Amino acid sequence: MTRESEFETTLIKRLMRSYPGAIILKNDANRLQGFPDRLILFENTWAAFEVKASEYAHRQPNQGYYIDLLNKMSYASFVYPENKEDFLNELQQTFGFSRSTRLFKR
Image 1 (cartoon, rainbow, N blue to C red):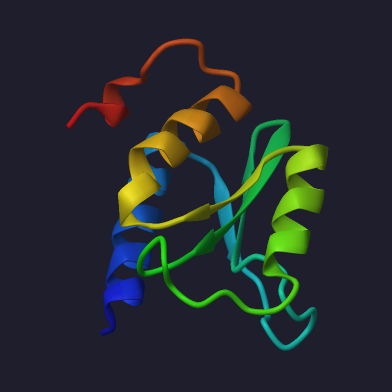
Image 2: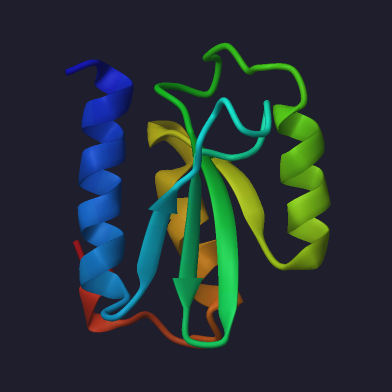
């Protein structure tokens, strides 16, 4: 497994524990070039995110465009090890939690 796939696997497991009942979809990169890798549906809202191995990892054309567009609709972000905690906090706010859940404790 590459570093990115290991990070993604760990992140998805954490999200599934943190948001029971959530549906996390992996998008087809060949269908719409640059669209974020993942979509999470939880209760009455959603978020999209693109997993990267690091802050400085290569970005495909249009990825920034789709992150910006989807972020205006609900929430979208790049996520990598360096911003993981910020991403989790922003996702928590998107899903309407005003306090830390027991599952976000380290």
